[in-house]
Image (cartoon, rainbow, N blue to C red; front, side, top):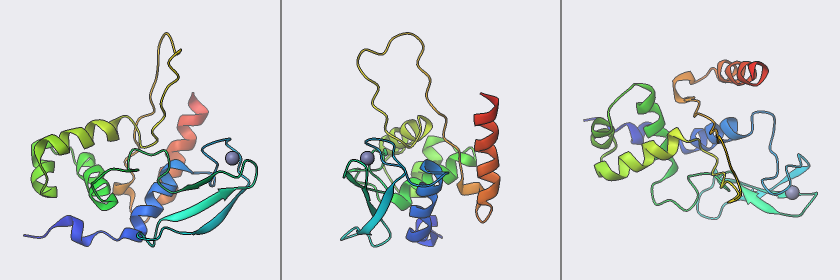
Length: 158
Ligand SMILES: [Zn+2]
């Protein structure tokens, strides 16, 4: 059996994450400044770009403040999960395809549905709270402009 995760390119996984969270260029998760410089690569994950904010000096990388940071599943497993979600596979089918425990698969699917950026709402938040939905970009391989258009449309129509 072909394992989809073995076909996934790590470099493209990180590019996908950058496209999803920073459509208009990298911004600092601390102060939202776009005055950000590249600051080398992660020691163990060569495709994971590090950055430094020139406004507030915060250092961060592609996965800072995302649901993937500090998680034990490799990024390619998450991307594969996103892709399979786009095919409307069930949690059980996704668990089987990714060769992971069904509870892990279910937890990943739930987190992905809430969006990839891990925004912890302030405790004082009241009333109606909305979460961004995840744009499944895995189905748009090679057509990032299609994803961008979708995001523009959403921003414009809001
Ligand atoms: Zn900053």
